Image 1: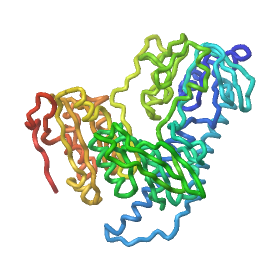
Image 2: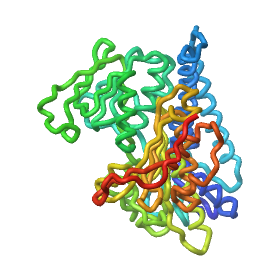
Image 3: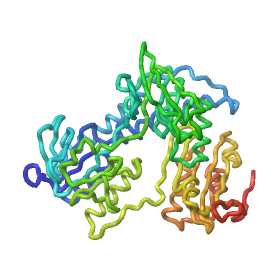
Image 4: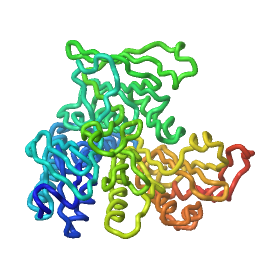
Length: 489
């Protein structure tokens, strides 16, 4: 149902979480156009969280079998249908994308424009390639939700190397013999774990002192140590050049100054393998949109600048998701979409609320966190209290023969500032803390006064919040805060 020709009530660029807003507008009787250059569903569905987590669960099953001996169960893996696993996951993803495609194509209130869209003016987009090349669409309201793509750092010679990004890595039908990963964040960590579990030798080159540099430093350090037991890990090294010959790739890396007190004391390293994966972060797709034709401004990193309501600097143009650059997480994009829907279709504007935005890394061990990190509190010179409790000191953790810990950071008055978990089910265990911070009083008492199932794994969270905290910060004298409720079974 078009307004007239190529004019619509709402024009959405990107078919990830932008579809939430498109659907909300269509339900209200508005005409909607969706511009999408790739498969429907955006990064998460097609080349991000959905395929990667489906694959990573196969790795979890594999690890479970390999650990069986620890429990007196003797099992051998006789075969792995690796190519079949990859094909099945990618077929599931394609089917979901096709389902969305069919839904938009057959909807009377949605018009799908397939191809790369570029702005002609503030409210008009032209499709410059793809099936609908040459078509134009304008919107009374425009939403930019065009996402990000893998960033390729300035490595000499990398364009002459047949490297992979996460997109291609998720489609490999055989594990590499020796995978070289450039990057130390969550994508690098997850893919290293996946391929390493299925037989690849893995080398990781990351610039920061630890893997997962955005995580709490204590968690990141423990995570890096676990990975260093499994893989060749070169943290604090920057990849500066890459080459390929006779089926072998070589990456030259040098000490990265911020990671070392004196980089000159450390030698350059050369890391070789048969496959190179670049997993060094994401870059916004703003440079593909011809934003110069609009009043939409970007920040110094190229992400779309928005106000607290997710309005851009151009009248009638909104933005959400990875291209805004606040949190590059699907659950954040969905959360922002909810804010945009409320702001478009209700009388009062509501700021986007990033309170207690959690993250998780599905490596081995799993990592999850919410709120501030200890290094952030130290940098701000804040007084705080902290406590850590180990998985193996609970009945369930002991039964599982696992190592890991829950770390809590609070204001001395008991307000929860952050919680960071390393170990099995971290992403699930974190959720009660997220709820306490967002929907409860936001204090340790939310956790302490809730009865926890015994002997469930959630007791490790209960115990982390229930015992004595150690004060730290400018006024702290390492005296204890709270009561020690620890008990063992």
